[in-house]
Length: 281
Picture 1 (tube, rainbow, N blue to C red):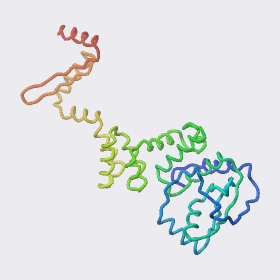
Picture 2 (cartoon, helix red, strand yellow; picture 1 turned 90 degrees about the horizontal axis):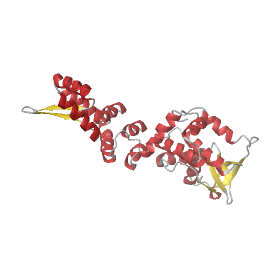
Picture 3 (cartoon, helix red, strand yellow; picture 1 turned 90 degrees about the vertical axis):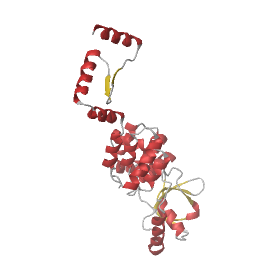
Picture 4 (cartoon, one colour; picture 1 turned 60 degrees about the vertical axis):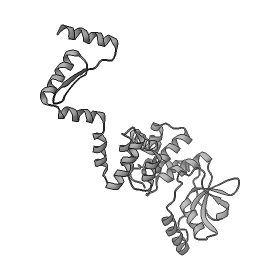
């Protein structure tokens, strides 16, 4: 089971077949009569791993039957598309299968949950599966979390990855950066900046912690703190005194020959209030 997935997934799979219990009959079905699950959230298969599985199929056959659903023309795969693809690659004509009776809704849910249980699932694929489950079953984040045995914040945090630029998504799919790197990059607002920093993460092999510290250093608050730390202490002290006296933000800057006091106001009323206070000085 993929890292971070709870026991709720197992209960979800059992629930799908609660009305279909009984002896499971394994049949040999022609590969030409089977088609991939139209609801399968996984659309990328590792070609090297698939070729290795195909060699195993040639030597040992299919050790675990796939699960299919009867359709108008032939069968739809519910679970086991990798075994189906490997069998075709190995030149097989048929495949052992268990035919299940289920609705399209059940087939879709099973495919998504079965996908979530893959050990090689990356963070972006996991996020896509959550979104598919929510979209097709009309679930909100809380309902999806309950159904999958996850916390709502966890689901929400994973779904944020879907907002990344496509170029960064590809880096996650290619396992060049992690989902945690991706979520950290979302702290930046500019997409071009995100992409540039993502490539720097790859090039310099940054850890998530290194990236977090770098992104934090780019925030306006961090820039302001740097400026304050660089100021002489007596200027910082006077800034604080003026802020308290005037009730607004005040910034004092100083160069070698001159300085400037900037007093902030947000409306005409506040401007007039500040002028009155300054006239009393």
